[in-house]
Image (cartoon, rainbow, N blue to C red; front, top):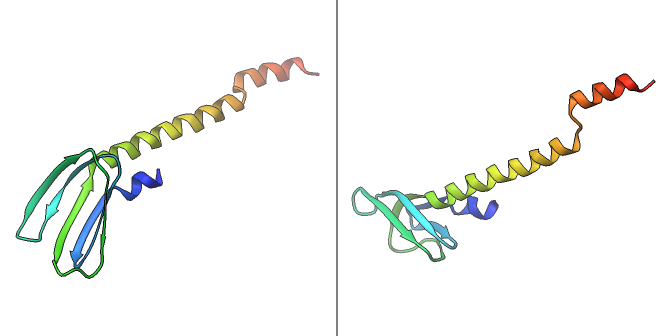
Length: 104
């Protein structure tokens, strides 16, 4: 899940930029480098960009919708698996009450 969380945001401000996607991306967000443009990008490839003090000044904020969706899906599955195991490990309340009635 940490891997998916690192892919959600791509940001560029001045001479600094960070973008990361692994396996696939569905990016949407504003690009303020040359006016206000909205960028929409889809790809099935990996990309990593970490720039420090570059000559080209870039200004953008991207959201990887695919990574956000996968993070939500993984979190939902994680909760279902963990909560399912906890429900199985604790006996239901009705059965313990019935059992307590018969134990002297």
